[in-house]
Image (cartoon, rainbow, N blue to C red; front, side, top):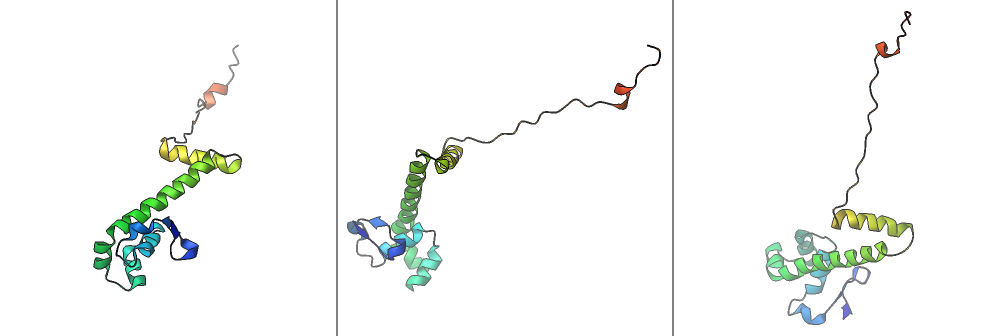
Length: 122
């Protein structure tokens, strides 16, 4: 396993997975961080069609790997201790277990002016 460009945004990937594509690690890293294919092509100075045709696996794989790493991090926080774990657990359960917050609104009976008039005959 190696860290790929750039150091600050590196994801760990297998060198064997890169094949003969010179920008494979960079494409996968940028795709994982949500950079669009058009912007990646612009940074690498290649045509968007060439990028999406040659690096389709890296464009998809980068997003999947990044999502998996974030899910793992959130899961670890959710099963941890402290205030942060409560927030992470609630978020996890809302998104993964379909929890939702509900509000209960109680309505008081409506009274009219006639309900408070006293009879003088009594």
